[in-house]
Image 1: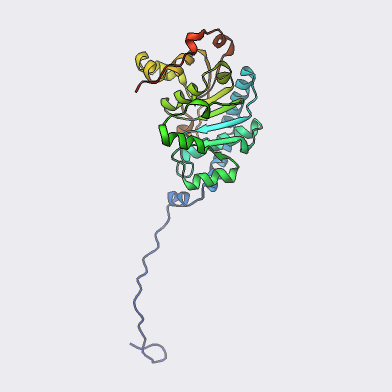
Image 2: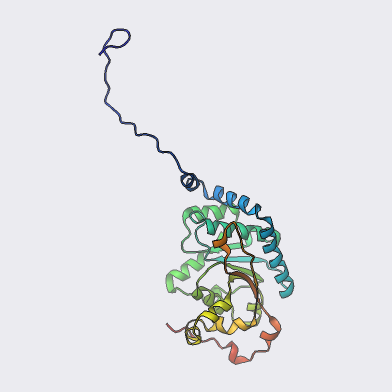
Length: 259
Protein backbone atom coordinates (compact mmCIF):
# COMPACT_ATOMS: atom_id res chain seq x y z
CA UNK A 1 0.00 0.00 0.00
CA UNK A 2 1.33 3.44 -0.92
CA UNK A 3 1.02 6.84 0.54
CA UNK A 4 -0.11 9.99 -1.32
CA UNK A 5 3.41 10.60 -2.61
CA UNK A 6 3.75 7.05 -3.92
CA UNK A 7 6.10 5.92 -1.17
CA UNK A 8 5.34 2.88 0.90
CA UNK A 9 3.88 3.29 4.37
CA UNK A 10 6.24 2.28 7.13
CA UNK A 11 4.29 0.40 9.82
CA UNK A 12 5.48 1.07 13.35
CA UNK A 13 4.64 -1.36 16.14
CA UNK A 14 0.93 -1.31 16.74
CA UNK A 15 -0.24 0.40 19.94
CA UNK A 16 -3.81 -0.34 20.97
CA UNK A 17 -5.75 2.67 22.11
CA UNK A 18 -8.72 1.71 24.27
CA UNK A 19 -11.85 3.80 23.88
CA UNK A 20 -12.13 6.52 26.50
CA UNK A 21 -14.50 5.55 29.26
CA UNK A 22 -17.06 8.18 30.01
CA UNK A 23 -16.70 9.38 33.58
CA UNK A 24 -19.80 9.18 35.69
CA UNK A 25 -20.85 11.77 38.24
CA UNK A 26 -19.73 9.44 41.02
CA UNK A 27 -16.28 9.09 39.39
CA UNK A 28 -15.95 12.86 39.29
CA UNK A 29 -17.02 13.20 42.92
CA UNK A 30 -14.57 10.50 44.02
CA UNK A 31 -11.74 12.26 42.17
CA UNK A 32 -12.16 15.49 44.15
CA UNK A 33 -9.79 16.35 46.98
CA UNK A 34 -11.11 16.14 50.56
CA UNK A 35 -11.09 19.93 50.76
CA UNK A 36 -13.08 20.20 47.53
CA UNK A 37 -15.53 17.67 48.95
CA UNK A 38 -15.89 19.73 52.15
CA UNK A 39 -16.43 22.91 50.12
CA UNK A 40 -19.12 21.15 48.10
CA UNK A 41 -20.88 19.97 51.26
CA UNK A 42 -20.77 23.45 52.77
CA UNK A 43 -22.45 24.80 49.66
CA UNK A 44 -25.15 22.12 49.86
CA UNK A 45 -25.82 22.97 53.50
CA UNK A 46 -26.22 26.63 52.54
CA UNK A 47 -29.20 25.63 50.41
CA UNK A 48 -30.82 24.49 53.67
CA UNK A 49 -29.90 27.62 55.59
CA UNK A 50 -32.86 27.32 57.92
CA UNK A 51 -31.59 23.95 59.13
CA UNK A 52 -28.05 25.20 59.77
CA UNK A 53 -29.32 28.28 61.58
CA UNK A 54 -31.62 26.07 63.64
CA UNK A 55 -28.67 23.94 64.78
CA UNK A 56 -26.77 27.07 65.81
CA UNK A 57 -29.77 28.34 67.76
CA UNK A 58 -30.10 25.03 69.61
CA UNK A 59 -26.44 25.19 70.66
CA UNK A 60 -26.67 28.80 71.81
CA UNK A 61 -29.79 28.09 73.89
CA UNK A 62 -28.16 25.05 75.46
CA UNK A 63 -25.05 27.01 76.38
CA UNK A 64 -27.19 29.78 77.86
CA UNK A 65 -29.00 27.24 80.06
CA UNK A 66 -25.88 25.40 81.17
CA UNK A 67 -24.08 28.75 81.70
CA UNK A 68 -20.72 27.82 80.29
CA UNK A 69 -18.67 29.17 77.41
CA UNK A 70 -16.85 26.28 75.72
CA UNK A 71 -13.22 26.96 74.92
CA UNK A 72 -12.42 23.70 73.16
CA UNK A 73 -13.99 20.97 71.03
CA UNK A 74 -13.10 17.30 71.15
CA UNK A 75 -14.45 15.37 68.17
CA UNK A 76 -14.49 11.57 68.43
CA UNK A 77 -15.82 8.93 66.06
CA UNK A 78 -16.42 11.28 63.12
CA UNK A 79 -15.57 8.76 60.42
CA UNK A 80 -13.51 9.53 57.32
CA UNK A 81 -14.58 12.78 55.61
CA UNK A 82 -12.45 11.92 52.58
CA UNK A 83 -14.51 8.79 51.90
CA UNK A 84 -17.87 9.42 53.58
CA UNK A 85 -20.25 12.21 52.59
CA UNK A 86 -22.04 11.93 55.94
CA UNK A 87 -18.75 12.35 57.85
CA UNK A 88 -17.93 15.32 55.62
CA UNK A 89 -21.32 16.89 56.38
CA UNK A 90 -20.75 16.39 60.11
CA UNK A 91 -17.36 18.09 59.77
CA UNK A 92 -18.97 20.98 57.86
CA UNK A 93 -21.49 21.50 60.67
CA UNK A 94 -18.72 21.32 63.26
CA UNK A 95 -16.69 24.03 61.53
CA UNK A 96 -19.78 26.22 61.22
CA UNK A 97 -20.67 25.80 64.91
CA UNK A 98 -17.10 26.66 65.93
CA UNK A 99 -17.26 29.87 63.92
CA UNK A 100 -20.62 30.73 65.50
CA UNK A 101 -19.30 30.04 69.01
CA UNK A 102 -15.98 31.81 68.45
CA UNK A 103 -13.90 28.65 68.94
CA UNK A 104 -10.71 28.70 66.90
CA UNK A 105 -9.65 25.76 64.75
CA UNK A 106 -6.53 25.30 66.88
CA UNK A 107 -8.82 24.47 69.82
CA UNK A 108 -10.52 21.62 67.93
CA UNK A 109 -9.05 18.14 68.46
CA UNK A 110 -10.01 15.07 66.44
CA UNK A 111 -9.62 11.33 66.73
CA UNK A 112 -11.02 8.31 64.96
CA UNK A 113 -8.98 5.18 64.17
CA UNK A 114 -10.38 5.22 60.62
CA UNK A 115 -8.77 8.57 59.74
CA UNK A 116 -6.68 8.30 56.57
CA UNK A 117 -3.64 10.36 55.61
CA UNK A 118 -5.95 12.40 53.39
CA UNK A 119 -8.24 13.11 56.37
CA UNK A 120 -5.30 14.16 58.53
CA UNK A 121 -4.07 16.51 55.80
CA UNK A 122 -7.56 18.02 55.61
CA UNK A 123 -7.62 18.66 59.36
CA UNK A 124 -4.16 20.21 59.11
CA UNK A 125 -5.40 22.50 56.32
CA UNK A 126 -8.33 23.53 58.51
CA UNK A 127 -6.01 24.14 61.47
CA UNK A 128 -7.50 21.31 63.57
CA UNK A 129 -5.39 18.83 65.53
CA UNK A 130 -5.41 15.07 65.70
CA UNK A 131 -5.44 13.86 69.31
CA UNK A 132 -2.51 11.45 69.05
CA UNK A 133 -2.43 10.29 72.67
CA UNK A 134 -5.96 8.93 72.32
CA UNK A 135 -4.75 6.75 69.47
CA UNK A 136 -1.94 5.42 71.63
CA UNK A 137 -4.37 4.57 74.42
CA UNK A 138 -6.66 2.68 72.10
CA UNK A 139 -3.71 0.72 70.79
CA UNK A 140 -2.58 -0.31 74.27
CA UNK A 141 -5.73 -1.07 76.24
CA UNK A 142 -8.74 -0.05 74.14
CA UNK A 143 -9.94 2.23 76.92
CA UNK A 144 -10.14 5.93 77.64
CA UNK A 145 -9.43 6.35 81.29
CA UNK A 146 -7.76 8.42 83.98
CA UNK A 147 -6.58 11.96 83.30
CA UNK A 148 -5.80 11.25 79.65
CA UNK A 149 -9.39 11.89 78.69
CA UNK A 150 -10.60 14.12 81.50
CA UNK A 151 -11.29 17.64 80.26
CA UNK A 152 -9.71 20.64 81.92
CA UNK A 153 -12.06 23.38 80.69
CA UNK A 154 -15.61 23.82 79.28
CA UNK A 155 -15.67 21.64 76.18
CA UNK A 156 -18.00 20.53 73.41
CA UNK A 157 -17.79 16.78 72.89
CA UNK A 158 -18.76 16.31 69.25
CA UNK A 159 -19.50 12.59 68.96
CA UNK A 160 -22.02 11.90 66.19
CA UNK A 161 -23.19 8.27 65.98
CA UNK A 162 -20.54 6.77 68.27
CA UNK A 163 -21.16 3.47 69.97
CA UNK A 164 -22.33 3.05 73.53
CA UNK A 165 -18.92 1.88 74.74
CA UNK A 166 -17.21 5.10 73.64
CA UNK A 167 -19.85 7.30 75.28
CA UNK A 168 -19.40 5.34 78.51
CA UNK A 169 -15.62 5.75 78.37
CA UNK A 170 -15.78 9.52 77.98
CA UNK A 171 -18.43 10.02 80.67
CA UNK A 172 -16.50 7.76 83.05
CA UNK A 173 -13.28 9.72 82.49
CA UNK A 174 -15.05 12.93 83.59
CA UNK A 175 -17.08 11.42 86.43
CA UNK A 176 -17.23 14.42 88.78
CA UNK A 177 -19.85 17.13 89.19
CA UNK A 178 -17.62 19.82 87.70
CA UNK A 179 -16.31 17.54 84.98
CA UNK A 180 -19.75 16.60 83.70
CA UNK A 181 -21.19 20.10 84.03
CA UNK A 182 -18.37 21.46 81.87
CA UNK A 183 -19.39 19.32 78.89
CA UNK A 184 -21.95 19.89 76.16
CA UNK A 185 -22.45 16.80 74.01
CA UNK A 186 -23.47 16.52 70.38
CA UNK A 187 -24.27 12.82 70.40
CA UNK A 188 -26.90 10.12 69.99
CA UNK A 189 -29.84 10.50 72.38
CA UNK A 190 -28.49 8.96 75.59
CA UNK A 191 -32.01 8.15 76.80
CA UNK A 192 -32.50 5.84 73.79
CA UNK A 193 -29.86 3.50 75.20
CA UNK A 194 -31.72 3.26 78.49
CA UNK A 195 -35.05 2.75 76.75
CA UNK A 196 -33.75 0.08 74.35
CA UNK A 197 -31.44 -1.98 76.57
CA UNK A 198 -32.06 -4.12 79.62
CA UNK A 199 -31.07 -2.50 82.91
CA UNK A 200 -28.87 -5.49 83.79
CA UNK A 201 -26.92 -5.06 80.55
CA UNK A 202 -26.41 -1.33 81.13
CA UNK A 203 -25.39 -1.83 84.75
CA UNK A 204 -22.76 -4.28 83.56
CA UNK A 205 -21.45 -2.44 80.48
CA UNK A 206 -22.40 1.25 80.86
CA UNK A 207 -23.13 2.04 84.51
CA UNK A 208 -22.04 5.69 84.35
CA UNK A 209 -24.19 6.56 81.35
CA UNK A 210 -27.18 4.75 82.89
CA UNK A 211 -26.88 6.75 86.11
CA UNK A 212 -26.38 10.04 84.28
CA UNK A 213 -29.35 9.88 81.89
CA UNK A 214 -32.00 11.11 84.40
CA UNK A 215 -29.99 14.32 84.84
CA UNK A 216 -29.41 15.04 81.13
CA UNK A 217 -31.30 17.71 79.20
CA UNK A 218 -31.62 16.97 75.49
CA UNK A 219 -32.33 19.24 72.51
CA UNK A 220 -32.70 17.20 69.29
CA UNK A 221 -31.29 18.56 66.06
CA UNK A 222 -33.86 19.29 63.37
CA UNK A 223 -34.16 16.86 60.45
CA UNK A 224 -31.72 17.60 57.63
CA UNK A 225 -33.26 17.04 54.20
CA UNK A 226 -29.85 17.46 52.53
CA UNK A 227 -27.96 14.90 54.63
CA UNK A 228 -30.60 12.97 56.60
CA UNK A 229 -28.32 10.07 57.49
CA UNK A 230 -25.59 12.33 58.88
CA UNK A 231 -27.68 13.97 61.58
CA UNK A 232 -30.49 11.58 62.46
CA UNK A 233 -30.97 10.78 66.15
CA UNK A 234 -28.52 13.46 67.31
CA UNK A 235 -29.09 15.87 70.19
CA UNK A 236 -27.31 18.65 72.00
CA UNK A 237 -27.15 17.31 75.56
CA UNK A 238 -25.95 18.67 78.88
CA UNK A 239 -26.23 17.93 82.57
CA UNK A 240 -28.60 19.71 84.97
CA UNK A 241 -26.27 20.87 87.71
CA UNK A 242 -28.67 21.38 90.62
CA UNK A 243 -30.27 17.91 90.78
CA UNK A 244 -26.94 16.23 90.05
CA UNK A 245 -25.26 18.14 92.89
CA UNK A 246 -27.71 16.59 95.37
CA UNK A 247 -26.48 13.04 94.73
CA UNK A 248 -24.63 11.28 97.51
CA UNK A 249 -21.31 9.43 97.54
CA UNK A 250 -22.85 6.17 96.37
CA UNK A 251 -23.86 7.78 93.09
CA UNK A 252 -20.29 8.87 92.37
CA UNK A 253 -18.66 5.55 93.14
CA UNK A 254 -17.33 4.29 89.82
CA UNK A 255 -18.13 0.68 89.13
CA UNK A 256 -15.87 -1.44 86.95
CA UNK A 257 -17.02 -2.35 83.46
CA UNK A 258 -17.62 -6.08 83.36
CA UNK A 259 -16.55 -7.82 80.17
